[in-house]
Length: 407
Image 1 (tube, rainbow, N blue to C red):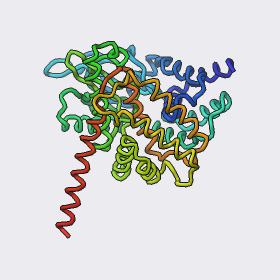
Image 2: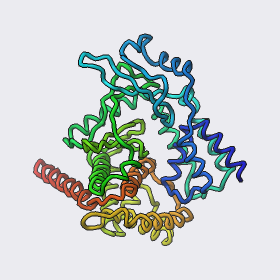
Image 3: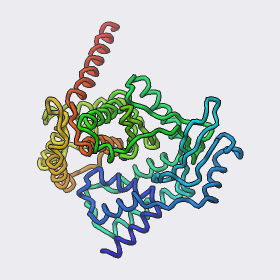
Image 4: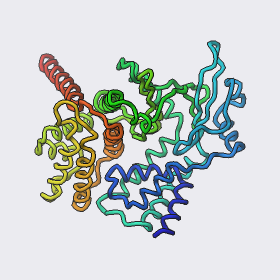
């Protein structure tokens, strides 16, 4: 197995973007179902990317920007400061009348976009030879969704628009503790994205701050996640911890990387909200009804599957069920362990793959909870969810009354 795992690691590092995406897609269903050797390989891939040689970097920049692109910049650092899954990041400073504005340019590795489909297929062939993935994971469905998402993430023009849209939503909500950096469109193209530089620390480092700071940050992360889904219906679906940058001095959470931003249909969101409410209320009939409507269940499942599905929903819904602040540190082992146990049972008895929207949605929601676990935060999850739920119920009631009056 060692040699095959090593071969997989080398191949995955070459197909970094596709590899990380597939790893994400599979692990959100249940991390414990992915064999440990593949988990270790994915961890290596996350950190191991080769930087582009300068000549290659210059070519990508010239193909995507005006020939005189450098005239807009006071400075540009040719050495990357970071690697993204499908590109690398460079610092620069704009020439502006008010003095230089610090920016970052994300430049995509050449050929990534063209080889997505074949990379993903090759990867899955490799994964299948290295280990047995359980049938109930419905890998083929996850793979098709991954291909679509990756193709979109390779289009930095889409990402620029998504980031500006998200920036407007954050500004409109009026929370001074949230920020989305501005986009500098004259230095953007299909494979190059230029945004304002923001300073902050990653969640790993934020986990060493005071309890008060960590509670504040956990609440911010969960708050924006609930808003994205239930109010805006437009969500940044990549839960990678490096997409959160926290400035402890200003107490501002900067949100970055919008390649995986996605809009959700209203009927799906409304029904999903009902399901979350049913999970938090331990309402078995409500969970089963919403799960059928959304396509998680067919209605023909065995009692074993129905029980496991409801129990998993109740377990995941615990933070929204607990009165007062939910202590993520005290519950980590019990919550994640129980979900893994049930996940194994559900994989055996599942009759249908999850609905397409569920892949990105679950990934983000579990990512928000994992961030709170990492921060060991205490967060009033139930109050936060219920304030959105009650507002939505009021709104629907009002609309119904208006409709009745009109008729």
